[in-house]
Image (tube, rainbow, N blue to C red):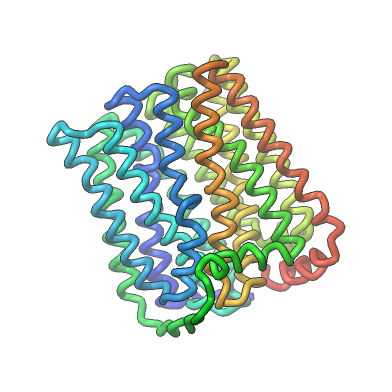
Length: 414
């Protein structure tokens, strides 16, 4: 199938490419600001990581309701401009010498809320721009941008943090959100105003996405796997930078290089995601990638126990792990967009985010707590083992009746 890049999709793609690159600077810049500028300890890093991802837990299902009630493009524009204003406060507060760990947490929480709203709308907006048979290719191309950003952004972040400090580097991300908003504003394809339900309780409406997922065996297995894996990864996330810098003793530049290799792996994964699922079937593709993701997570605690080889371990973990994640996510996102009707897609996407990113705060708080009492290495091993075991939820997909139909869809779209 030939995918012709439409002007409106190209605008979305271009804006997101710029934003994705700069967002990697903030993703690394916020914890580095806490670690290097504010000298945060392991517990504070855990709280910051938890707060950054807690928005999806508090606001996730509500965001799905809003996206299904409103037009997606205005929601995305408002979220972009809001994030630009919030992140611009970080360098301003640092310049005025009033930046504190508390202020950083508040900004991270508010920006995280807007990110949840944007992401739910973003995943629900692609079917508006492209035809159904083009969804896999559209997701693949957007994933290429994300992977390219993963390759360029962290390396750029490492250089910028050393050159102009982490708070000032975050200013670039604030400006990138303005670029993203302008690219969205320039899209001209008409979006139909969704029909609003009357007399339906908001809570019941918010849970419609979860109910829809629960009635589809494939989506249900993916949701349970995501909840388990991200809970375990929550233990790792707040300790990753601390382990790399204070235990493995990587410089910020070396850290940027290792993370950038993840972007290179993601590019490879994006290029082969459709072909793999078409050749081997969605069930087997989900299973193999999930197992390899878990195995790669085990290289993180190995780096803490063998710091001499830590850089090599972290580079391998980033490259292979991100390759597998990209293949997994491209197929999972396309599957959701194909199975869920437009009127409930926002809530389905929100439910999946709740089961993934919504679990990170619990894991992050536990990770900070365990690391303070039992050490970084043991906590990382617990998290990595949890990620590996989470793939057990996907075993039924290989024998599910529903997966046979999904394999046919995958072959048709690749």
